[in-house]
Image: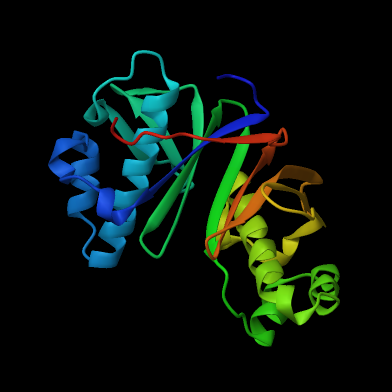
Length: 231
């Protein structure tokens, strides 16, 4: 499971979340206690649970989940630890509407994932956050496919900014989606960084009214779902 072109993906719903005291590490317990807003606590817990499920599926001899800790680095990006030592894996998290995803890849991959709902976006949103070329692509898309495209582009931009470890602190127009594949299932995409002259390749799919996107540098060539359900 160390091919940099392969990313492993876990999705989890809030209804699957067990009691936190059963799987949080000591530092995570402290972080949780400092989160006062219920929605923030719920998202944080769901993301950590998905990450631990993913890591337990890819490491040899998976340990108890509380031995993993998913902690924020100084730039805010999540990092995976086991018994106080950094793991040779990179992770990316996203959550929306009670669902979280975690992508896992070998160390050295600049990795980003994003989960979005396919929903209408305003003209002002498109004007403010998309490049001229992206806006042209949207305008030239038939109405019935426009919402899916807008949200696919947005998810790709968010994933690229996560891979750059900046998130939305950076102008979303500084990265541009230059390729969006057609067809069914996982489709190719490419995002170029206008500041660092870097490119990210990956895959996205429309799934149950949502867009799931995973990309990286080196490019993500294959996304493999991890089934950690009992039995």
